[in-house]
Amino acid sequence: MAVLETVFWSASSSRSALAAASTFSKSKANAAVAGLVERGLLEEIGLQASSGGRRPEALRMSRAVGVLACIDLGATSLDVAILSPDMGVLAHHAEPADVRASPAVLLSRIRELLRELLQRCGATRKEVIGIGMGVPGPVAFGSGLLVNPPLMPGWEGLSIRDVLGEDYAAPVFIDNDVNVMALGELWRLHRRLPNFLVVKIGTGIGCGIVCHGEVYRGADGSAGDVGHICVDPDGPRCHCGNLGCVEAMAAGPAISRMAVEAAQSGQSALLAQVLKAQGSISPIDVGQASRAGDAAAHGIVQKAGTRIGQMLASIVNFFNPSHVFIGGGITGIGPLLLASIRQSVYHRSLALSTRHLDIQYAPLGERTGVIGAGVLALQETMRARGSVPETVA
Image (cartoon, rainbow, N blue to C red; front, side):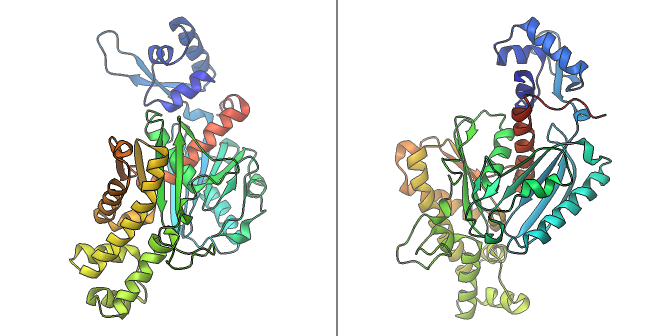
């Protein structure tokens, strides 16, 4: 188990690197690797660059072990992928979705897509060794049940595990979508950053917290629900019932609402044209108008970024992360939003908290969710079983 986990979390491991990263002696590491290669759990993928001596052989989780079924359900989108145990994307599909729709309809579509993607990459249901899914709401991680999900009330008490378990013998793991994104970034970074935040800005705003190299979920699974931090007590009413939540003032719907107001009030001829042509204005439209020099659009993006930064400054002062990675559909607005967030955070946070702070868009981009779902599936499968299943080939 120690060897498998070390290989999984490493960019590329060799026998000598495994010995250095664990308490194993070199001979014990060699023996463990030889046994895992013989059992088909690890595979050698070629020689690494030499550091002065013999070139070491690189190792990775064997693709013969099976595949992972990965689902990233957002408020307005659905990403489904089949991944290999080394997080290689074997098949992928993305489409718009409305999480407020019937759970039965959405879960039926997910099951259909999983069947299609498995067929596309030449895999069978028996080859699925783990299933990971991110959802846009608080999750009691132990049971996999959603708890008072504000964006998807019809899902409370529904066992997604049982529904997907009708098709697969593999274990199913459910988590909040931002926690899943945090796992994706943790894997990309090979656990080299122990304390960082991942913030998703879309229909809502949430935060994944990585503390000491592990995702922190809190006592009841609601850690990171930062969208309901108040940034203006006189602000608009949020769907949670409170006033001035950052989600109500800076998430995607708020940006669209401000853009429509600017178009209808005559503040922006460009946004008025977009509204007339499409009947609506998306945050991406606002970003494009801003880059085209529209002053009203520019102001909307800056205002949203400032509000998000105001909320983040409090989190940065409290948690003191080394990095903040920002993801979600709003990142399509472009660099102005990121610049506004940074400026607000640096202005409002303590100097010591921001001395080495790096704020950037999530490098994995749109793949962060499905990669994170794959990490969730494999990590929890290994923990539950003490290993991964033997090769299915």
